Image (cartoon, rainbow, N blue to C red):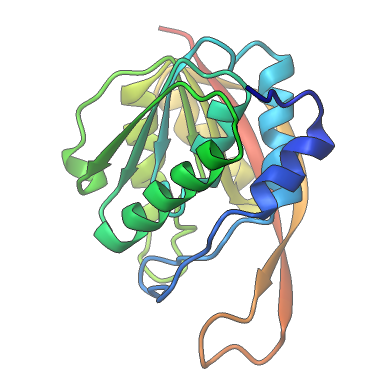
Length: 210
């Protein structure tokens, strides 16, 4: 069985995953850039937050983060989304990776609204809606992440760092690492005027102090 041995190989493997068939604007369904996904996952791996761990990918969409964690040796990954069609794509992506002879841990699919979710994991990886279409959607996801695991990796607009600092402090969590990216959003919906629009996004690692 094949193993992933470098960040570049991980990025290549993630680049072959299928994206959304019919992305939903209200849920801010955009496919993550495979290079950015691989960068965060590799950093998490080096910090000891992936291999042998039970991980939850909240709002997983097509499951790039969750599948990346499995490729790096996660013991189990909960793939959670409220969109059944997105989970079908995620399931197909799992099958695609397995067909390439990669060894994967257990993947468990959960179709549920984030507010109703009650699971426990060791690490959360998430790329939540940024709250552009539904105000405070990112805060709802982050609150659930803190309930789910003591270590959380979460993508947010870089301009919200101060808010995230205050929010996490109220939840007895600290920010340990921040990785900044220019997130490429490819033209997905009819109202998009540019082929690629780049926004400043940060992936933040939080750690519970409870």
